[in-house]
Image 1 (cartoon, rainbow, N blue to C red):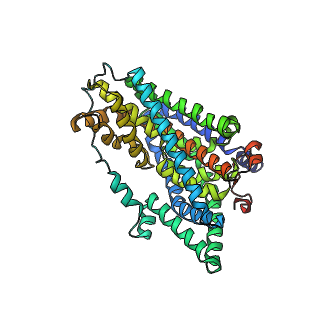
Image 2 (cartoon, rainbow, N blue to C red):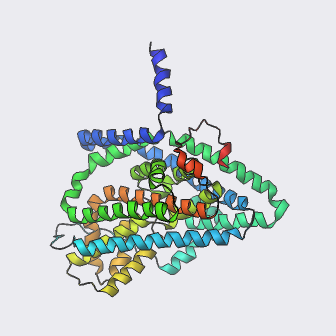
Image 3 (tube, rainbow, N blue to C red):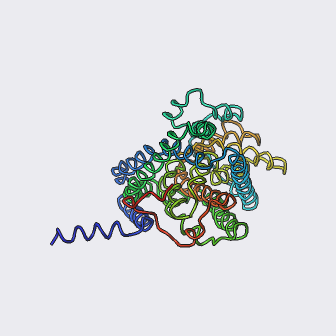
Length: 433
């Protein structure tokens, strides 16, 4: 009997859409973590193994797919048009995100009357200057950049490498074919890794729920509530509005098709760890052609941090209110500009934005000691909010990629409207290129 039931259960498991399996794992993880408590720490290694598997494929995936995408353009001149539209949208959505966060923080005033005397000062990461950020884009050793996972440098070299293949014409055909095959292989590997997602998500959410939980937010409800409200407004109004009013597409279809990436982003709290899933969702669900998905999305995972921008802005205003610093309109403009630079320089890893708030808070006159206290105050409850802002970051990447794909005529609207589920890894990957 068991030999008959087992294949049936396995078949039913794989026939269930991946997003449902991930969502089930997420719900079960919350329940198990709440019951198990600190003991859930013992299964965290399963989630860490899942993240390591994603990190294993992300660097070669980014490099190979960017090169293959640029080669598929057929004309290096298209890089200029695509690049301008991509950067303009990323910067524009980030500026809107900052404005929403600062406005809500100014209106709700979550920092008034907050006592941070019991907060343990956090260790601050020195802010990276704009000049240093620019210098890091050009790698002195491309191989070292690949080994270290330095995404800005990887993207820069991949763009140059792809443009070089195009410029040499027929002499670059063997390398072009190699990259094309490599991209198909990496997407196949991504599909295999994604079959681990429900188990990894379960372990990670159980660990967070058991060791930190939502109860950690109770001490900072005004701050957390302000941030969550800003996330929700940006998520539905800005991304939904971009779909409906600018692109004339269904916001429901967009959010429905993006859910695989959104759920993985929520569990991993890392845009870069979610990137392989984001690229697969873009190509298989949203109808974004590889030439756009492979160039716009890796860049977005590196520089598009709408959720981080909102959070840094809200916490900075919160800190000013808590320490009695009166903010002028000029201060808000300065914070908006500083937050834009900080969000661009934020590493796409869990919790990174907490340690990069120093550069923004310093612009409004807070001392290093005060900034350290603020960081120590927000750290205990940062993980749940980090999960939410990563969802926003990844959804923003997909929204921008959808817009650029439609404007560049690299978009399959029929696929976008059809509601395709994530393709099983055993399916033919020949349509990915």
